[in-house]
Image (cartoon, rainbow, N blue to C red; front, top):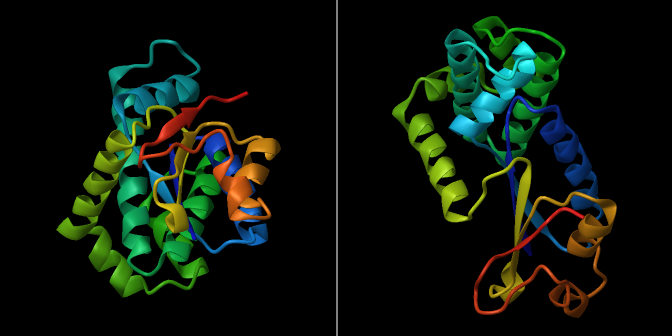
Amino acid sequence: MLEVYHFVNPLSGDCLETEKKLATYVEQSNKKVAMQIIPVVTMQSARETAMAASNSLHPSLHDLNVVSQTLYQVAVDTKAAQFQGKKAAREYLMATQQALLQGHAYSDELVMQTVNDLALDQEMFVEDRNSDLAVQAFRADQNLAAEMGVRNFPALVVYDTDRSEYAVRTDDFSDEHLTRLFLSATRQRLREYDGFLHNGGVTEVEEG
């Protein structure tokens, strides 16, 4: 089985596109795939998002605070949705990203409309999004990203649980790389992929 961790900036259009692309490869994979999309909030991602939103190299402190708070709340709410399943979390995040990239503000009204559209348990979601457990899950994700050396978004970390000593971290989402990761005909071909490293390490494959 492949364990896939897709680290994303919740307000990035590029991340939304890689989420859609990965979903196709996961469906086509000849191995069982457990995929988790992990929204990550860093000072760098917040600043880059604020710069893009304000179309300025020097966003105001107010703009930076608004973006940081939105990133944080989207990430925590995604964790709340995840308590109803990883698929629920992926669908919630993607629906939210699409709405935000279309110019909608991240509000309680948008959140609950999304929860309703996805047929999630509304009472459970509201309770979870306001719980310490969701915040703890968010913090655990941030620690996981740091432990895996993820600094840029989107990024992908893949483990082959049948051969636990093989793992790859990459920011290359080209068809060539994703095909080799997900559609290799045999385990041997997968092990021969340049991104996999012996002895339990994770090696990075740069884009291109």
